[in-house]
Image 1 (cartoon, one colour):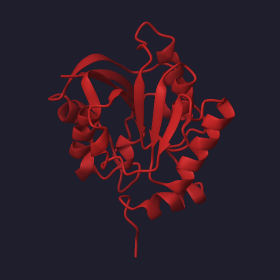
Image 2 (spheres, one colour; image 1 turned 180 degrees about the horizontal axis):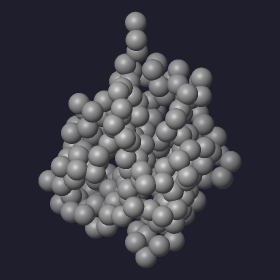
Image 3 (tube, one colour; image 1 turned 135 degrees about the vertical axis):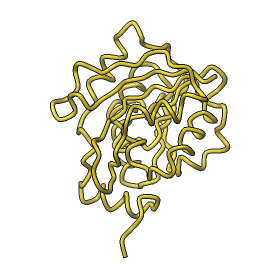
Length: 203
C-alpha cells in the first residue's frame, strides 16, 4: 500500500533513503543574499515549517533570530539538531519542535516571522489553503512571511508538487500585503528561473 505524504512514515523513509530532491544540501543562496540586502528584517522569533535538514534554520539562528525548526520526521529533526549543535546555537537561538505544523494551535500569534522554503511544494495541493491559514495564525499582528518558493513545473504526482506564482498570490493575498517579490539572480544552477522570493506582512 502506497504511503501518503501526510504520514510521518512517508517522510521518514525519504530522509533515511536520501530520496530528497528538494534538498539542496546547503543553504539556498538567495536566503544568504536576503539577509545582507536592504530588504533584510530585524531579528525576532521565527518558525521554519517543514524545516527538513535545517540549513536555513542554522543560517537565521546564527544571525540573531530565535529560530524554531518544525518537522515531524525524526530524521529531519535529528539532522537539524546536529546543525544547531555544530553551529553552537542549540538551545540558545536554535530550537526544535517534532510536530505536524498543521497542529500548532498553542503557538498561534507567537512568531514575528514564518520562513518558507520547500514546505509548500511538499504538501498535498488540497492542503495548501490550510497551510496559508496556518502561517497567518502563527504570526503576531504585523508579522512577516518570508518565502523562497520553488516554482515546480507541471508534472504528475509529487512531492514536490507543481507550484505557480498565481496560486501563491491567490492563497496568501487575502491575508497578507506584499512587501517585495522578485526572482533571485543567484539560485543554484538547477533552480535558475524556478525560484521566487517574497516577503509578506500579515494584515
